[in-house]
Image (cartoon, rainbow, N blue to C red; front, side, top):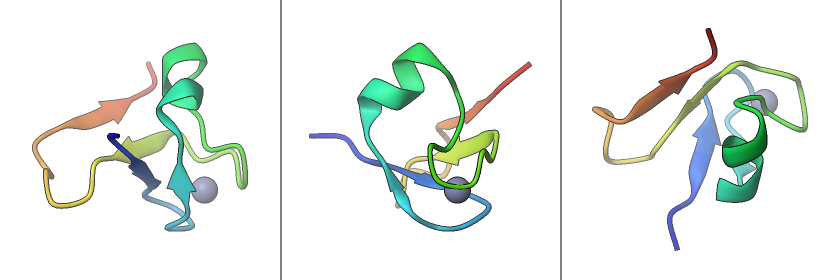
Length: 45
Ligand SMILES: [Zn+2]
């Protein structure tokens, strides 16, 4: 199960959230990244 992390607050973000909206449900951060795989950075807009 791929987990993402919020770049802003560092909390784990489920993939479902990233699918709907690239936004951290905790702090509203728009930069979500995959831990260890830094290449896969999903950015909103
Ligand atoms: Zn966050």
